[in-house]
Length: 389
Image (cartoon, rainbow, N blue to C red; front, side, top):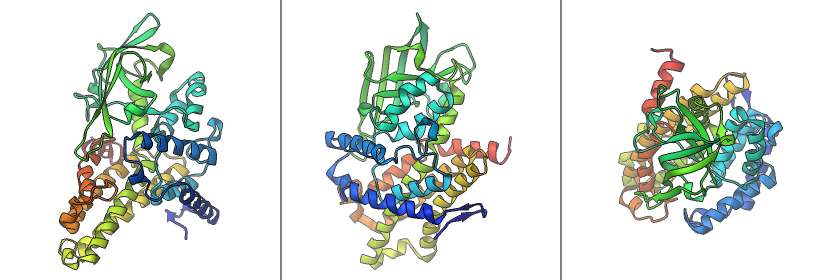
């Protein structure tokens, strides 16, 4: 069965066959209970994720979203969509290198020097080096441009000082894509630069943050006179804000949305199963609420296909990325509340995070913050999509 958007985005039979091959490969290479067998943050989890990155490369799937000139497959938008959908639906791991592949690599391809591309892209693709995104600070979240981590150019090297927070998987990564202030006299958007900072360098301290879901997905990262060579400047000096905006568009893109969509759908399906087991719970999900919930779930991949359709026509999909992010965040929060009511106390008794509807609900509070708050997305949509001032 094909999908169509505006009559110009149709998944061809050969792409569907490709999806079947990917699905069979995932099922042959991923343990069914891997989320339980390899608890997040354990040494076994880290090695499992790194091994998955290597398997993706060896199978030729790591570069599905990369152009051929950088070692990727040069796949069509239709095939990219099929790949992202299958990986999400099968519950495949993302790999420790997913941020490098999805977000950092496109930035290096667009803004990096040829030397930086040769140095950093092959290890990202092959699963040999792993990246963390060091943007948010205790005093610079939604207003990211007010960041205060600074980098001073001294003797041909940057000296980096400051603190980042909510940095995913920082303690397991080799490199940080760090947003720093390099001109404290310039307007806040004009004095920012991007640096590739080795996270094992002298002066870097990483402290995992214990969360309410019993995990430490994020960490604080401290920089104390960390020396970074000038050649690690990505993009122009004091021109990092444009680079950062490009990165955020990729962070809100197709692969991340499809992965979260699959998690959301599995939680909803689990709630429906709980209702079938105990019909008295259906008072929390009447026919109207159930229909809306399922429609919201189905709408997310449709917007994702529209995003790819725009790309297929040669357009800029960045504005639609904000629409997709806002739609998904709102739907997740509404659905999580309904799911929690429908599953009742039983949702709090399951200890495995992959199964707990209660933890799904708790994470829904964060989904409208990470990757840009819903308020920021509304501003982007108002200004760039609707043309409001």
